[in-house]
Image (cartoon, rainbow, N blue to C red; front, side, top):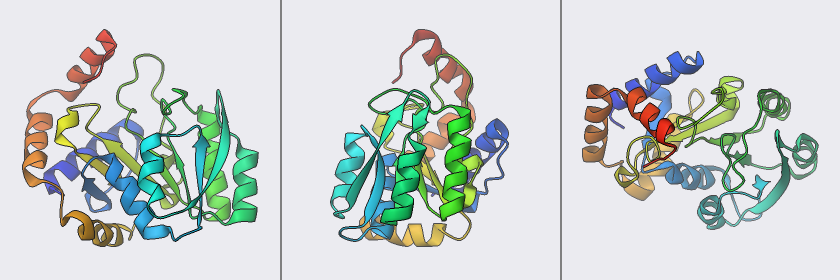
Length: 229
């Protein structure tokens, strides 16, 4: 991906959430949907377990289904997923990863609270498990406090996926993923078998926008009107 764009992403979220993300750990994707496909390609073989929220995003089910996993559903309450169910799956099913949407979960709309995020991160550390944290909505909160991504609590166990579709323009089909140290070359190799690289023109257009306009003013206008692009 375009280095300047990856540097912009790293700088923004390092400041916003107190992270230490490096541009070399960021890969630009053709929308966050591609992160779902590439992650599944890297880890899932037929019959492998993947933990998902109940209910979960239909597009994720579609992206992962081509690799024929066994979906392991966990219930959601108003604070987040059922941790006992997740731990039971970790202990008994040896899942390859968990897929979750902590902010404004699709389709339920709920947000994991801070305690749930911390407890979930500790669970991944305990079992050495991977979380695919799908976070396309983290920039468009209309009210309440912004909560840190689970990636910030267990960066070695999380693929943190974001998208410019909600915050800038869906038609550009640009997303990104922040990966643990040493993983990006493997992710890029799996991605290249699909598209060689993400669209350069869209990346330059996007970088021109975020470097010449105040993205926070733009996001603030969306929050004030209660609408997204």
